[in-house]
Length: 515
Image 1 (cartoon, rainbow, N blue to C red):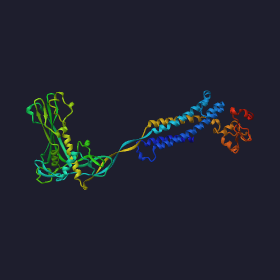
Image 2: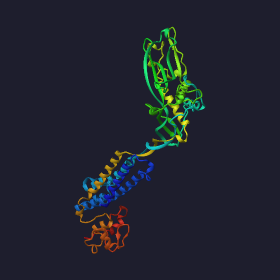
Image 3: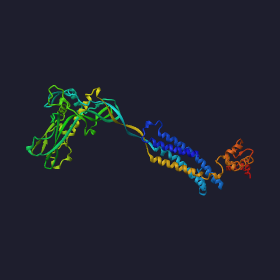
Image 4: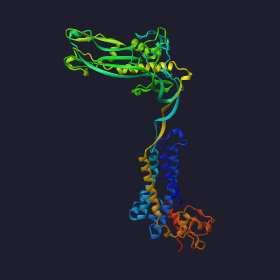
């Protein structure tokens, strides 16, 4: 049947919209899925109503062909919308099924659309796409940009404003202006710049923090010095010392780290947020070293006035910002330290990390500063690589852009629930058409067709004519008039029972149905 096919097509189209739109950007749909679902839902509801009307006609004529009371036939026609037909519902299965079917259709038409609307919604999703970003970052810092050599063996340089500005920006954690186009969202990738390659090792020793003989010894420190390896290549040595743990007797474990650092070109992980560029410290370790290199300005043979290299610049940077040495100070009943700002950054203030016996006597623990110092060095060189870049240093960097996008999100539980209800309603209505061919014709509840079946139309012109189309073809031009009691023309019309108020006047006008 055409209506059934239309309803199945609407259900399939609705399911397709919900499935296809899932996780798709809202901007990619010119017509919202909710609008399409409402459109298909309206067509489905209208088709179901028409199909119900046709099925009620089949039930009515089938009941009439098997014999039924007028009250039951009227109950079927009205779909049981009235409490006065409860008795008919109890006695007639056809009437009972017509009412149940009608209410099932009402429930399906009311409930299926809200369920379908709940099957799709919008949510914010972080969409990741591949992009290419152009950044101006120098792979190497040229000698002399940081400053000039004063004493290469001692690691002393005359610092230029270039380096001083970079150190100030690092200290203040100033934002880095993106040396390239803005990123619409957050772009994450890697770019080559001047950095470091290093290898580190650690050793441990013990120290009695209550012994007066140990007063004045270092228990925390950050220091750098310029050296060279066996081949004469310049090396920056980073050494850190800290009291890592203390037992109940105030015996501390002193941990010492030594790192040999070389100048290198590295792949820095970066994050661009709109017009702001930052070094992605979370993905910085281990550093991705492209190549190590030797700068003449870092050699111990560099002469005074020669341009300083990146390692001498790092040595100057750490010496002027983070270098410190903290000594143990032993008193009669307790021990303290003489450190200030830098050592306090790494000092262990958390009381729960100490043994209760040491809290009032030797609370002198620090966390490892080594990784922080190495990160500070790379941050300094990263900022310097951006500051020193020229147009020739522009790099095309593949990146992943993450941006918030409004997308459709489907809830398939509501879709399945709605389609199940719709399918059940359609099948129940279609089931009433089974054996409709036993009626011998296409039936409707047209008043003309029903009146003809009751013999209220002129029989001499409508012999053996039962379908409404045939009836209208034969007698469609007949003019009738309703006078408040019956339709009248030259034929005898089917009468209805008058109201009590007019019964005294109309009783004389009633006529019997013709044989």
